[in-house]
Length: 487
Image 1 (cartoon, one colour):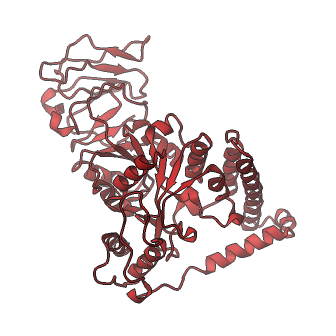
Image 2 (cartoon, helix red, strand yellow):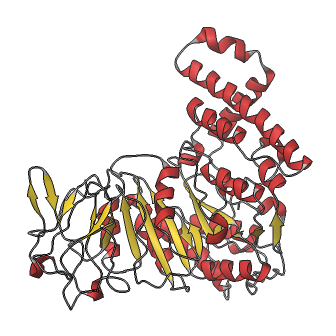
Image 3 (cartoon, helix red, strand yellow):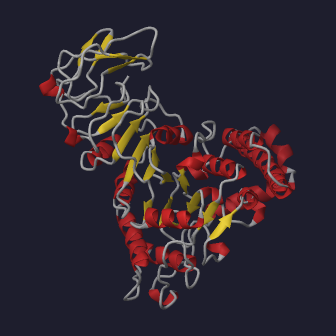
């Protein structure tokens, strides 16, 4: 059925065996969709009205909703202005018109038939959501406020049972660049993102989480830097904020002040806790659509799906540009799915790792072997934790004699107790003057990560920036303050 519990008033008529609707916004009331058992899409014998978009009506036999059209045109009609760039000519079921004029995709069918008249956007922003109502509006607003206006925001909801869809539809009613995909049942972040990727039309694909914030110039800068460098992927630094320990950025340990190319071997080694590298899998890349092609997230992964997708791109020869710009505010909180491992999630990660394509060189093969060992060790540890929680001492005791397991257990306990860190509370801890943001893809005067980390930490504790702080620092400080005050 449709991904909405409600339907437009007096817009839909139903028979016990069939939903009835009209797909083309300007067809005459007598137009009907003809169904055929021999073809999934069959043109109607009725012609569209002269005032319509000129497209024929279609019947989608593959949609589980089994739609037929019969509706009063004066009640159903949606003018071209209510669509982002004109009338769509997709088969029925691809897009469900909402009472507020926004669009919502039916997850029972695949991509459109390619007859739409929209001009493709420069970038499609993919935002997966599950029970993210608390932070969803601010995340969407930060995307829609980008200086690169030629974008589409595809919000793919994974059957949330909170107010997420109501929030999304309210925003979609005010900005026709928003597309909504609502799943009928929960399938995990990988499958949820894949639905959005199937709908994306932009030359670039950007991934933004539904509880994070991005700088207004982020997308424009990343795309410009990637084009200049001939890169297929590009990502910037993540600045941590939220209820978890903060005062750092993801790439801070690199001391990065200029862009660098990230190869498959170091990206793979970053998944090894003993490698002392940033966890590159947390990066939120912007990906050239031609490089992504038909590649999708592994739907069997609930954790690590981002790392797996990018790694497969790199193994296939994609070029990944890393820039030091601290323009992605990454929220860390106790409910983040990225921090929850279990026997099942680690087993899936190990299976996906062993299913990777052949490694291109000895360095990458050695890194893959090291990660395989670490994943097997992580799996033993998760079995130990599961046995302890279930009081299965016969299974837990043998593992407790493993020094690696004892060390990891002690590390986990220390991490649980160290939720607070010493953070600077005034601007005296900042460099003076703060570095100015360079042109896209150019080097900074100094590594910006330490300053960005201190700014986020200060803002969380009510600290103030020095007078004349650069715009990127002001944005970061205000983003953290606003997010903290909003809960």
